[in-house]
Length: 374
Ligand code: SF4
Image (spheres, rainbow, N blue to C red):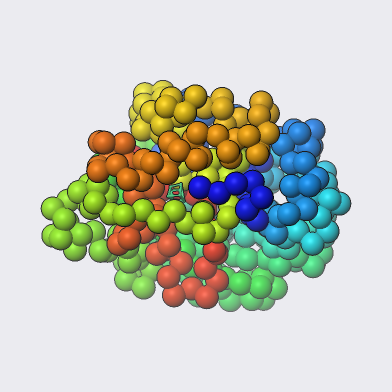
């Protein structure tokens, strides 16, 4: 793959903690109890200084704070961390992705002075946002957004469309314009997909903490809000016999090699991308049951990718990045060792992630989270 001197962008999960419980995020079991396999971790300024040496920060163009599990606003020393990156590289672009429901208006004012852009994930209005963004308060989110905008930050409103909020898209967009958001992004979620069954699904059940079904989330009815890649599933089944057979057959074109980016999770593990890292702790497999663990075993174990124990240059020049993972792309099938996450994300004919942003001018170049629940 690449070497350390090629890296221009880092996707950083500064914390795996979150105030919310979004039902399609693997941090919880369908919005209910916490995923017991997931380590709850956050980075301090000291941790960041250990991983990110000044010379490396200077070569970066962008760090975006997002992650598979956590909200960056849960990191206690987030402001100090942003200040550190800025002090080492004043030109660096610092972007954040958040539900906006944590911390004070004063905190978000300071974030507005330090970041280029914040994506606020707000999936509806006062009567609907909490249906997906469980445990968040809409009024507080808007206060925080307003404070961020007042400080001069470029605010983006990311809106995932479901059946329950598709009637409010225009109203939310108008509100975003009145408040001074720079962009409003309609996201056609690719998460109505079962990773364990390799097939699309029409609804997502939502559990309470005792694993009782509370309600379910439905896809939007209007086709303009539906994920076009998921719509293609039937064509691929006809062409290949099943979606699984398509994943076996498709060539892989690794997007992070082209984008010169890497991913670091809240425990300090370094992966090429969030999609591969997201295979570590799916609650619906037994611990270490997903196929990424086989690749890790072949290359010395997960600890070899831990940036608290090895330097970034050592990790990137090690077996996982240079041999085991790239070789897996040539395996003849998923059973033979090709990573399903790679076939699904970087294959040629099916990409629910990219299709989230189709026809949006504001499509981000680099990814957010992987489709999650089983
Ligand atoms: S999913 Fe695999 S192929 Fe795609 S960017 Fe990540 S490592 Fe590369």
